[in-house]
Length: 201
Image 1 (tube, rainbow, N blue to C red):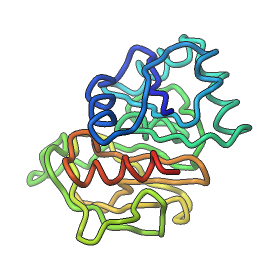
Image 2 (tube, one colour):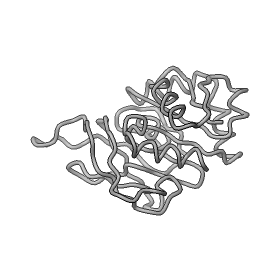
Image 3 (cartoon, one colour):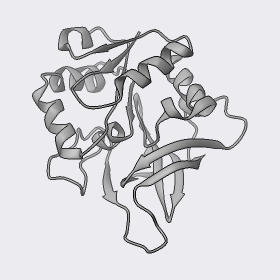
Image 4 (cartoon, rainbow, N blue to C red):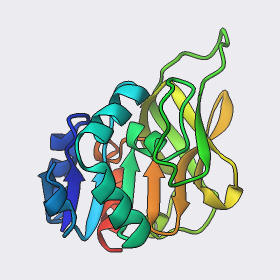
Protein backbone atom coordinates (compact mmCIF):
# COMPACT_ATOMS: atom_id res chain seq x y z
CA UNK A 1 0.00 0.00 0.00
CA UNK A 2 1.30 3.44 -0.99
CA UNK A 3 0.25 6.32 1.24
CA UNK A 4 -0.05 9.71 -0.50
CA UNK A 5 0.67 12.30 2.15
CA UNK A 6 -2.13 14.82 2.64
CA UNK A 7 -0.84 17.92 4.39
CA UNK A 8 -3.03 20.36 2.50
CA UNK A 9 -0.70 20.96 -0.45
CA UNK A 10 -0.49 19.03 -3.72
CA UNK A 11 -2.41 17.36 -6.51
CA UNK A 12 -3.40 14.28 -4.54
CA UNK A 13 -6.28 13.18 -6.75
CA UNK A 14 -4.35 12.98 -10.00
CA UNK A 15 -1.56 10.94 -8.38
CA UNK A 16 -4.09 8.61 -6.77
CA UNK A 17 -5.94 8.18 -10.08
CA UNK A 18 -2.75 7.34 -11.97
CA UNK A 19 -1.72 4.75 -9.38
CA UNK A 20 -5.18 3.19 -9.56
CA UNK A 21 -4.97 3.17 -13.37
CA UNK A 22 -1.74 1.13 -13.30
CA UNK A 23 -3.08 -1.25 -10.67
CA UNK A 24 -1.22 -0.01 -7.58
CA UNK A 25 -3.13 0.12 -4.31
CA UNK A 26 -2.90 3.54 -2.69
CA UNK A 27 -4.58 5.72 -0.08
CA UNK A 28 -4.59 9.44 0.71
CA UNK A 29 -4.01 10.19 4.37
CA UNK A 30 -3.08 13.01 6.72
CA UNK A 31 -3.21 10.80 9.81
CA UNK A 32 0.17 10.28 11.54
CA UNK A 33 -0.99 6.94 12.96
CA UNK A 34 -2.00 5.74 9.51
CA UNK A 35 1.33 6.94 8.13
CA UNK A 36 3.08 4.75 10.70
CA UNK A 37 1.77 1.64 8.89
CA UNK A 38 2.54 2.85 5.34
CA UNK A 39 4.61 0.52 3.16
CA UNK A 40 5.64 3.32 0.80
CA UNK A 41 5.02 7.08 0.88
CA UNK A 42 4.53 9.75 -1.80
CA UNK A 43 5.14 13.38 -0.84
CA UNK A 44 3.40 15.63 -3.39
CA UNK A 45 3.72 19.40 -3.51
CA UNK A 46 2.75 22.46 -5.52
CA UNK A 47 3.14 26.19 -4.87
CA UNK A 48 5.63 28.04 -2.68
CA UNK A 49 8.37 26.27 -0.70
CA UNK A 50 7.85 27.98 2.68
CA UNK A 51 4.07 27.55 2.54
CA UNK A 52 4.42 23.83 1.87
CA UNK A 53 7.06 23.31 4.57
CA UNK A 54 4.98 25.25 7.10
CA UNK A 55 1.90 23.18 6.29
CA UNK A 56 3.90 19.96 6.69
CA UNK A 57 5.50 21.13 9.94
CA UNK A 58 2.09 22.16 11.34
CA UNK A 59 0.29 19.01 10.19
CA UNK A 60 1.64 16.70 12.88
CA UNK A 61 3.05 14.46 10.14
CA UNK A 62 6.67 15.64 10.26
CA UNK A 63 7.77 13.50 13.21
CA UNK A 64 6.04 10.40 11.83
CA UNK A 65 7.58 11.00 8.39
CA UNK A 66 11.08 11.42 9.83
CA UNK A 67 10.70 8.22 11.81
CA UNK A 68 9.39 6.20 8.87
CA UNK A 69 11.94 7.43 6.36
CA UNK A 70 15.11 7.87 8.43
CA UNK A 71 14.65 5.12 11.00
CA UNK A 72 12.30 2.69 9.27
CA UNK A 73 13.84 3.05 5.79
CA UNK A 74 10.38 3.20 4.20
CA UNK A 75 10.59 4.12 0.50
CA UNK A 76 9.64 7.77 -0.08
CA UNK A 77 9.01 9.54 -3.39
CA UNK A 78 8.87 13.35 -3.50
CA UNK A 79 7.15 14.82 -6.56
CA UNK A 80 7.77 18.33 -7.96
CA UNK A 81 7.85 20.68 -4.94
CA UNK A 82 7.82 17.51 -2.84
CA UNK A 83 11.25 16.70 -4.27
CA UNK A 84 12.55 20.18 -3.41
CA UNK A 85 11.28 19.69 0.14
CA UNK A 86 13.59 16.67 0.50
CA UNK A 87 16.60 19.00 0.26
CA UNK A 88 18.24 21.37 2.75
CA UNK A 89 16.21 24.35 1.53
CA UNK A 90 15.29 26.64 -1.34
CA UNK A 91 16.25 30.11 -2.54
CA UNK A 92 12.51 30.68 -2.79
CA UNK A 93 12.04 30.73 0.98
CA UNK A 94 13.66 30.92 4.40
CA UNK A 95 12.47 27.71 6.06
CA UNK A 96 14.68 24.65 6.21
CA UNK A 97 13.78 21.67 4.07
CA UNK A 98 13.53 18.11 5.34
CA UNK A 99 17.27 17.65 4.84
CA UNK A 100 16.98 14.04 3.68
CA UNK A 101 19.26 14.67 0.68
CA UNK A 102 22.19 17.11 0.62
CA UNK A 103 20.99 19.47 -2.09
CA UNK A 104 19.55 22.95 -2.61
CA UNK A 105 16.73 24.34 -4.75
CA UNK A 106 17.76 27.40 -6.77
CA UNK A 107 16.00 29.84 -9.05
CA UNK A 108 16.53 29.56 -12.81
CA UNK A 109 18.86 32.34 -13.98
CA UNK A 110 17.30 35.34 -15.75
CA UNK A 111 17.99 34.94 -19.48
CA UNK A 112 16.19 36.49 -22.40
CA UNK A 113 15.73 33.14 -24.15
CA UNK A 114 14.70 31.21 -21.03
CA UNK A 115 11.03 31.26 -20.10
CA UNK A 116 10.35 30.66 -16.43
CA UNK A 117 8.63 28.55 -15.25
CA UNK A 118 10.10 25.63 -17.14
CA UNK A 119 6.83 24.19 -18.44
CA UNK A 120 6.22 21.28 -20.79
CA UNK A 121 7.91 18.09 -21.93
CA UNK A 122 11.65 17.57 -21.64
CA UNK A 123 14.12 14.72 -21.83
CA UNK A 124 15.67 13.30 -18.66
CA UNK A 125 18.82 11.19 -18.84
CA UNK A 126 19.92 8.73 -16.14
CA UNK A 127 22.99 9.76 -14.18
CA UNK A 128 23.14 6.56 -12.10
CA UNK A 129 21.43 3.16 -12.07
CA UNK A 130 18.22 3.29 -10.07
CA UNK A 131 15.27 0.97 -9.39
CA UNK A 132 12.97 3.81 -10.55
CA UNK A 133 14.46 3.96 -14.06
CA UNK A 134 14.37 0.24 -14.84
CA UNK A 135 12.43 -0.93 -17.93
CA UNK A 136 13.09 2.28 -19.87
CA UNK A 137 14.26 1.19 -23.34
CA UNK A 138 14.05 4.65 -24.95
CA UNK A 139 14.93 8.15 -23.85
CA UNK A 140 12.73 9.29 -20.99
CA UNK A 141 10.42 12.28 -21.50
CA UNK A 142 8.49 13.84 -18.65
CA UNK A 143 6.21 16.80 -18.02
CA UNK A 144 7.70 19.65 -15.97
CA UNK A 145 6.26 22.77 -14.32
CA UNK A 146 8.73 24.56 -12.03
CA UNK A 147 10.56 27.85 -11.48
CA UNK A 148 13.24 26.46 -9.15
CA UNK A 149 15.63 23.59 -9.83
CA UNK A 150 17.66 21.25 -7.63
CA UNK A 151 21.42 20.75 -7.63
CA UNK A 152 22.84 17.98 -5.45
CA UNK A 153 26.07 18.45 -3.51
CA UNK A 154 27.15 14.86 -4.11
CA UNK A 155 26.71 13.46 -7.62
CA UNK A 156 26.00 10.04 -6.13
CA UNK A 157 22.61 11.50 -5.17
CA UNK A 158 21.78 12.45 -8.77
CA UNK A 159 19.40 9.97 -10.42
CA UNK A 160 18.32 11.91 -13.54
CA UNK A 161 19.70 14.96 -15.33
CA UNK A 162 17.78 17.44 -17.44
CA UNK A 163 18.81 20.55 -19.37
CA UNK A 164 16.83 23.76 -19.54
CA UNK A 165 19.33 26.51 -20.23
CA UNK A 166 21.45 24.88 -17.54
CA UNK A 167 21.81 21.29 -16.41
CA UNK A 168 19.92 20.36 -13.24
CA UNK A 169 18.97 17.26 -11.30
CA UNK A 170 15.54 16.10 -12.45
CA UNK A 171 15.70 13.07 -10.18
CA UNK A 172 17.51 12.52 -6.88
CA UNK A 173 18.07 9.50 -4.70
CA UNK A 174 19.65 8.44 -1.42
CA UNK A 175 19.00 4.87 -0.33
CA UNK A 176 15.22 4.61 0.24
CA UNK A 177 14.55 8.29 -0.57
CA UNK A 178 13.69 9.36 -4.13
CA UNK A 179 12.59 12.63 -5.69
CA UNK A 180 11.52 13.69 -9.17
CA UNK A 181 11.11 17.29 -10.32
CA UNK A 182 8.59 16.41 -13.02
CA UNK A 183 5.02 15.17 -12.70
CA UNK A 184 4.97 11.40 -13.38
CA UNK A 185 1.17 11.42 -13.06
CA UNK A 186 1.05 13.73 -16.11
CA UNK A 187 3.83 12.01 -18.08
CA UNK A 188 1.81 9.22 -19.75
CA UNK A 189 3.69 5.94 -20.32
CA UNK A 190 6.99 7.28 -18.98
CA UNK A 191 5.36 8.34 -15.73
CA UNK A 192 3.43 5.08 -15.53
CA UNK A 193 6.66 3.09 -15.79
CA UNK A 194 8.40 5.16 -13.13
CA UNK A 195 5.47 4.90 -10.71
CA UNK A 196 5.21 1.16 -11.41
CA UNK A 197 8.89 0.81 -10.54
CA UNK A 198 8.30 2.68 -7.29
CA UNK A 199 5.34 0.48 -6.48
CA UNK A 200 7.47 -2.63 -7.08
CA UNK A 201 10.20 -1.63 -4.61
